[in-house]
Image (cartoon, rainbow, N blue to C red; front, side):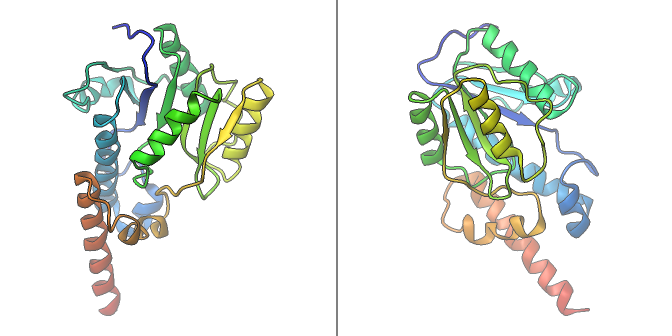
Amino acid sequence: MVIGMAEVPALVLLCKRPSLGHGKQRLARHLGVETAQRVAEALLVCAVEDAGSWPGPVIIAPASRNDYDWAITLLPPFQPQTLVIPQVSGNLGQRLNALDLALRRQGINQLVYIGSDAPNLGLTDYSIARERLQQYDTVLKPAIDGGVVLMSSCCEWPELSDLPWSTDKLAMALADACQAAGHSVCILEEDSDVDELDDFMRLTTQLARDHRPARRALHQLVCDIAAAKKIANAQL
């Protein structure tokens, strides 16, 4: 399937298939593997919700080729231009470089990448990212913990394999690498993602007024887990 140059950027959702005992390990240490899987599933639904409201092409990029058929089920039903491209093996930088090249070879020149760990991203955030991408080569939205919650570019990414992925130095290193490659770079206001238990519990207030259905479901899940932990702690 070939997607031509779009009037708006394409949204690329990088995702892992939630499974018991894999992913969200830092949450699993506090909540247990079954609850951590429920959290991962709820977070992914939020990202898919965003893909469903995206005004342009959508690409689902599962972490494994074995999850192609599963990823097909995530495609927004009313998106006119959608496809699934599994990630290759390697570290995240290598996978991003390979995916980015494959998409640009299909004629997609403006790409906005997200994961499934930033449910605070809203319509305004996406609108600003699309707008800035018409003015800059690369637009990054850092995470409060030093990572990134959104990364977009009109240009091929520079070599990403040696960046300090999963550290608090990532956002700065990514911006530096893009600038060294000659990109004009826009840094948006930082936002939070969900890695640690405190990040997850903050969603009780961060999503309290978010009326998007997947966010309402995630908010209810957080509140239920928080209430259960409170009862369990009181019984100790």
